[in-house]
Length: 293
Image: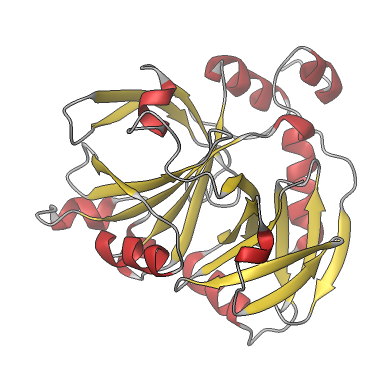
């Protein structure tokens, strides 16, 4: 196989460190209404998006002006138990894990799959999927998984729409909220920080990260590339982060939103990450807000 240098692929218009655009970030739980209610109590509205065609899950979403959105995913009321058990995020759903997975939007999924293969990164062939909105509008897309772990876990999965993307992101024709610009950081729990950094650099041509320790969060952090990805390795073997990795593997453990008026969001705890204050909201899982950059 001929390996194409990462920098050449990046300048040809494919994904590089500065071009990682979050399509959506998934929050999983056994009951969708519970996920929606928790956000509503914090002051964040959501809209029902419909049931997936897998006979297992349904979703609601919080869409933002930059085109990203939080996907709240629960188990359908009349779900097929076998379909739930077989679902790639079944343990996240039944375990009420909260942060579960994330996706990157791409304009040419076949080209990005080829780029990753050339970089020596495992990636699946694109597969078609979809769902029907409550108003009857059918949405279709294709996705590819990166890496060999849980889909959208350590690495994001790729998604490209086959129907107009705005119909998927904005079911009401506009963002659900303008309080936030969008999803600014995806925090991924990892076992070995050095190895995780190496794998991300291989996949996306990222430079050396900026690192810091957050004792309150219980992690050594590595800020990758343009800042979208934060890798978090537990500081101790008995921490919440280590226990989460043991249960769910390497996968997102928190998401951070860029707030237009960060002072409005008081939070229950605060962190200082890479020069910016992150305020953690009380929603039953780790959702942070920081000032829009």
